[in-house]
Image (cartoon, rainbow, N blue to C red; front, side, top):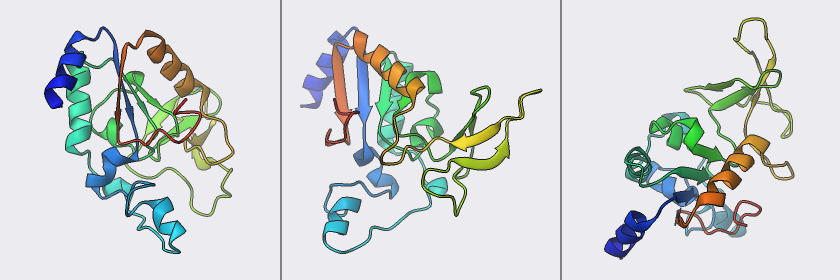
Length: 189
């Protein structure tokens, strides 16, 4: 099977990867629908462990994504993951559409500057739809408020990430899904 996938990738003019929570399980981060997944355990009246994402390291799968991007066998990565491991692996933001946000990324509401942190940006105690982190933009003359980039249930996907994913898929003739059940819409559409 691996040989067949390799042949498809080599024959492809534009390959996009679509990644989900399953890519990060070997980093100790639970998925959602697997045997120990967040929703699976919740249905059993149990609670999944909440790992410290700031201590999680990119997996072999994340490094493979980076290598395929660097070798130009992959042209873009669309991810449902919020764990920041794609960026920690060294994948530049311009080749990545993080549809559900990133726990380590905050954005200036005024100028749009992005700050990738080595800590979780969400401020403890905030209401679920209050994304202000309490920090200010560092761009000279801006000082706009920074907000975390996490998308919660009931919120729209970020325009920038959605637009870059749509652009990538416009040219895609091969999409490889890694670690996703493709059940979460609109991302799976």
